[in-house]
Length: 440
Image 1 (cartoon, rainbow, N blue to C red):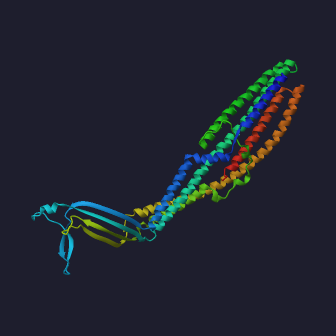
Image 2: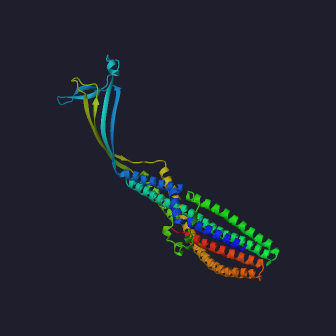
């Protein structure tokens, strides 16, 4: 029987070494990067930022002139050229219209061609700050979209970190359960051998077998929890993990300094700050909608009139125009002012929400620091308990081999050891979770 136990131990050791050699350790940073590249929310945030940047360019176009080119050709009755004295002993050509009922009805309805081509230039000379306000509002919205994108990225990273730590905890609990299950199998075989040798009473077989089955049950439950945690991590990342993937235990050694970063680095608070600034800039733009606009325009081109003149040539008509305009909005029923008032009220609302969020964030940071400190002390105590339980198990099992101890003492010592190992894992994960809660 002892040879059988030795063979089983050798096989288990070989399998463990093989699994370790082929296991793929997946780092948290690696999964975070994958999630940012694949997550639809992060991609949508980037698209929203590009749209806001295009809006800025649209607003800035108000500073530049507008140039256009137009070509027009049409067919209509009338448009006949008539020569008249110009008052300087010369003649001028004007466009006349033949009327009906004068014996020339055919000329009145005869269609004639006209083609024109011109280049136009228009620009606002001064709009009393309306364009400047539009540019400022669009830039504020661009900055808001950038910070909103950062907030979306932070939410994606937070989801990945929570899922990763859940996976790591489930992986370690399963490892401990697997070890306890193998220990239960070895003890069952060992007790069976001692009973056959007559060194232990047969009545100890039932509690030993019950302990083995309980360890196996805990292992099956831990395996199910590990599969569920793995699926949650795959969902947060957006892709499946390899079957041999294992978490990186170095995450549990994260440093305390990242618990309390600068408030300016908090994407949620920055998002509220820039949203408020964007609303204030929009309100200023809305209040300038009633200001006048001074504009200038110019156009030049040529036109060709058909039919041709008496000399057999088409009439080419030059045209140009230069203008200066003033547009003054008088009253729009109070709609623009109401819009500005509503926007300013929304900005005030964000100011109050920002104050509340800052207070909540300070409380959450303090809570994270306290949680990290408590988890560290729990870890230290659990490690001391683990050392004591390890020594206790060795002493009890040695006494059981000599017949000086009962199996229930072995069972109790082993249960305390598993509890201590579990508490060490839970304390380490809790500390890492508290520290990573505000990590950049």
